[in-house]
Image 1: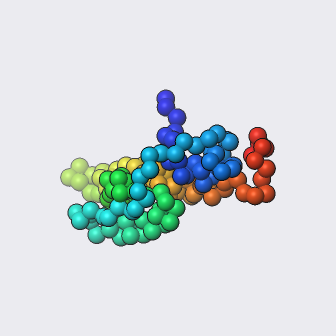
Image 2: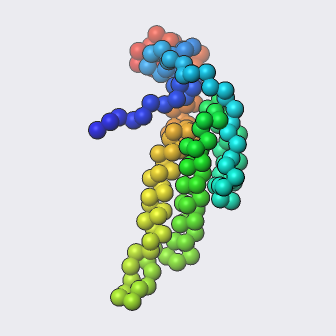
Image 3: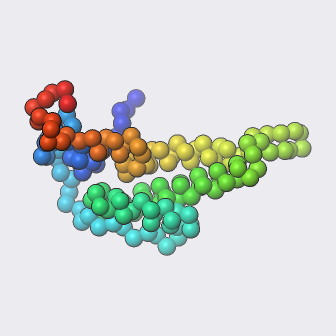
Length: 152
C-alpha cells in the first residue's frame, strides 16, 4: 500500500526546520521554475464552483502554491465542492431515505455526498486546504527552535 503523496516543495519548505530544508531537516529540491501565477477559472465552471474558486485562490496565491498548470486540479476540486453542496441540499430537503414503490430506500444523494466528501478531502489535502494540512504548513520551525534538534 503506497504512503501519502509527496507535498509540493513550497509546502515542505513552509513547515521546514531551516532555510531550504523540510521538517525532517532534509534538503528540498526545488521544482521546475513554473511561473507562480494563479490560473484563471474555466468558463464552464458551475456557479457554486466559481464561488469556491474565488474563495480559495487568493489564499493559495499568497502562499505561492498555485501556477497556471494547476487549473485542471483546482477545477476538479471546485466542481467536487459544488457537487457536495448540491447533494447536501438534496439530503436536507428530502432526508436520508426516499419512498419507493416497495417501501423506503436510501436517498441516492447520500451516496453522492459521501463520495464527494472523500474526494474533497483528498483534493483539499493537495492544496493544503484542510485544518490538518494547514497545521502542518503553519507549524514549521520557528526562530525559537534549534535547527539541529533531531526531535523537533
